[in-house]
Amino acid sequence: MFQIKNTYLGDLRTEAVHLSSQNKIITDAPLDNNGKGEAFSPTDLVCAALASCKMTIMGIVARRENLDLSSMTCEVQKIMTSQAPRKIHEIVVTFAMPNIELTEKQREMLKNAALTCPVALSLDPQIKRTVNFNF
Image (cartoon, rainbow, N blue to C red; front, top):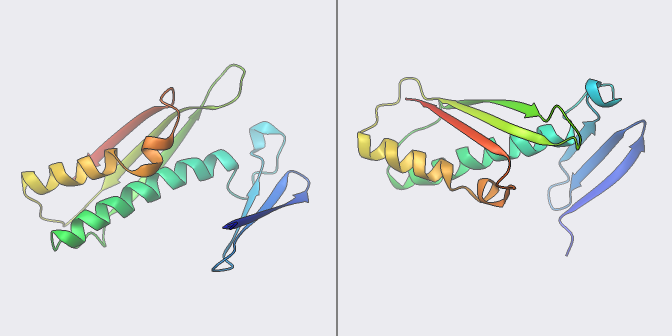
């Protein structure tokens, strides 16, 4: 059964609908690739998916360990290749966890969870992934 329906809206814009919830995501081609840059680009979504997956898996560990990660944030930087073919060269993910008291064991568990999330394991190994943890 299909989970997502994508529609090309024209002018380098798409709409993705999550069928069970009807939530929608609009994408635009980025400014540096003939687009308007008015929404996430498809490669932006790859990077956002990586960060969201990392945070979700860390959340599963935190729930098990009775930790509150609700103040955790994450910033993502996407670096594209400078030569053809155009693709993601590197994704830099930086976590900030202010005011969260963690033992060294808990920090290591959270790091391991983030580094082994399903999206990270699904990406092409040629994509460099830099992950920073600011505990």
